[in-house]
Length: 114
Image (cartoon, rainbow, N blue to C red; front, side):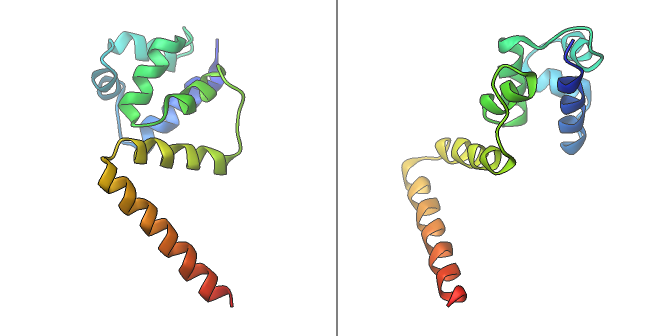
């Protein structure tokens, strides 16, 4: 069993102040399914990992990596992956505003470095 994933899952639930029941509701699965993963009695599988990603508002790839379905990436890449996922959920105008904000921050950083 994947004890590393269960530790990751418990850590993510704690960071969000979620109980197993909260996660089960958010993921649309039974509490038993979550309990089995948390206690190392079963691996999540891709479907459950996708549901957990949705409940945590994370890109599925991040949960797949934690579950061992994908190779790990550097922390910075994980954060960028989350940003891309979140921005992808915005409407076109909001995406353009986020992009304008990023450009503005980059220009401010350049000015401060001079």
